[in-house]
Image 1: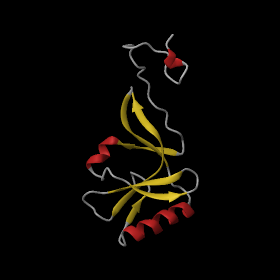
Image 2: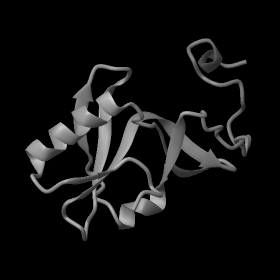
Image 3: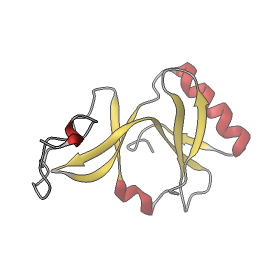
Image 4: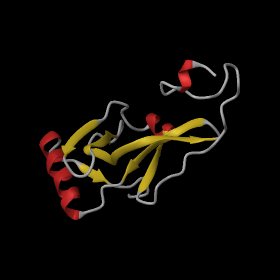
Length: 121
C-alpha cells in the first residue's frame, strides 16, 4: 500500500484501469455539453451572487452577439463511461436570482437576451 492512499490518493495501482462510471446529475442541475464550445465563447462571464454558490457562469453566443446562456452555478465535471462530456451546473431558477443575472448582463450588454436553459428559444 503506497503513501498516496494516506494523503488523499487512490488505492489503485499504477497502470490499473480507471473505472468507466458515469457521473450522476442532481435533480436541480443540468449538463452543458462540451460540444457547445463550437457555439459559445469558452471564456465565460461571471455574475457574483452570494446565494447559494457564489459565481453564476454565463456564456456568450459566438454568432448571436447579444444571446447569453446562463449555465448556472458550477457543480462538477460530467462524465459518461469515464470520458468528459460536459460540465454540470445548478440551474438559476428563482425569479429573484434571474433578475440579478439579467441586471448584470444589461450592464455588460444593453441588448442582452438571457437563456436559462439549452432548450429555451
